[in-house]
Length: 493
Image 1: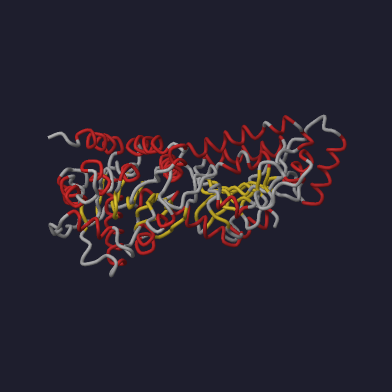
Image 2: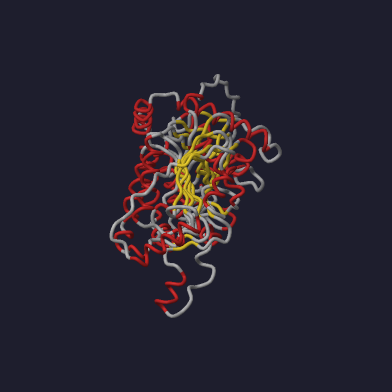
């Protein structure tokens, strides 16, 4: 599919306007290379390997940059790089979201090192665009390799790829020539990169407009449309033993973060992995909206914990979410529901303790609104890492503890038999958290959340919408100062 056809497929009909200006001929080109350029221009009807411009997706104005692979394998030389940079800078100046569709063999070898270093200035332009608080979406096409993948192809807030696309830093033909053997099969394929947390999804081009529309509705939300919701009074919470809540939170079939998203959220765009080669099923990460309120959701996935406890990669995924939220001014919703992080050699050598510390430091200092929902189990450092927020909500049977009560009992009494007693004395249950200022609201669950998950999740969705919108309408400096004061004063009577 040509770059032009891709534009027709993803943009509103008739909305595309080319930004490309005539190129100034470069003197002193090798005659053979100049002949190649002329042949490429004749066969494609284009003057270079990239097409830039603007259009609309579902009425939203966006900028588009795309490679034309049939023009010298979509390779990037000085002229193509200059065109890309001018388009990215124009998108930044006009405050437009940017959609990129790389499809390239990489640096144009005919131009050598001077072409190679062009990737630096393209990356600078993209980083400036992101730093201006503007969304950058990438759709990687087949094939995309070399310097293009290692620069503007790998800087997206959200990155998706064409099914079966060859994607890699070193092209397989070059690898074979250098090493005398083929590159391992199945490594440089979009589906494999998804499994390793390098890209967020694999989708056909026909679905790209829908995915972009959904993501941009969150990433590029209309701040002027946010309005305050009327306050609601929470139901009274019965005074039941902490151990009762802990046992209920552990029941099979209790709804978790995925049920919350199914019943209460819209415009969901999953973010898979760290973007740097790590995938952790135990952390759910997605762009979403609760009612009118946009956010990034980062939550423990109780279903994935059946496969094993979450490791440090999950916290690195969370920090990826923090970084996107900070750049784009998006609220963060963290969801606590964990029996505890992994206790293993891999976790220790993977820097688990340091990741907890970095999560705490980054989350508490984020300039955007932050809400924490204690949905169920809240055990240990894995829970604490997602806790410090402007507002903390707990379900009736949510709880927070330094260790599972059985572990605390073993430390204090060398037996797990006193777990119930420990849970009571440590003040882990939602009502105790509310009394101690750790939690701001406790949401009643009814008789059994397993029997009516939709009712509870929709209630929580309304609460989150209410909390997010109130925080969005608060002065950011005042909001951060209040957050810091809150945690500085905990435990001071």
